[in-house]
Image (cartoon, rainbow, N blue to C red):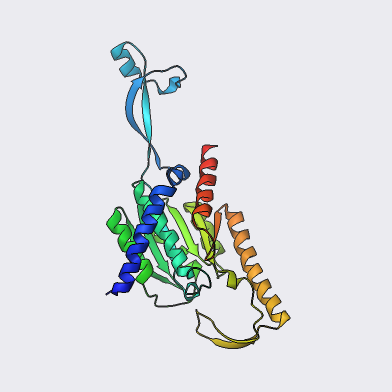
Length: 293
């Protein structure tokens, strides 16, 4: 049972993400993703410049003047949100926690999907698949999805991206639009990642917080790993330690950048201190440009 405070928070979030999806993305999402094919819609009279290959000869013969066939794109797509609920997302030093940023992005993408009559589903994961919400349509379905993102308590707090991508490739057989939303603090998922990129239209949305990029010089500190619970006393004045942390973060970034480049996958970087709308709009505009070529 959700508390009254959490329910009100989810309701406010629900209305905000619905507003953003309806008013700020007008057309970008629909232009970015291609339908599954085309279907016949109607015939109309031939106009100069029409391709003669689409002339409907039977109708033209019946009326004694040329008519052409008109086709519409089969729009209905399936969108899968792959959402990382591991412990590292319960962190934030700016406007919000990483999990709240993740929820905001997922909510907007879900509303964009149903706005264009696409189906949307979600896979919540940690070191394993925690919950699978099958794709469906409608505002009530999105409401359920948002509640799960906010309220679900994962059974484990560690991360294993390979496990969720392997699961995705088994349960989602048909081509889908897949958004992996995670801080991507993991390795060893190259094979499942490449397979997902081949089967689906995959986009990685990495969420981060500025404080993760470098250790502050604050002297002795007790730090707890949010995924393992381990606590360590460290001296943040140590230049060597700060350099090692910086190198570790740089290696993580380089690993992911190389992975998405080799697989031909889009990568969107979002921060708890930065905007959400502009990076997503650039993503959709880039996909739309490539689609039109």
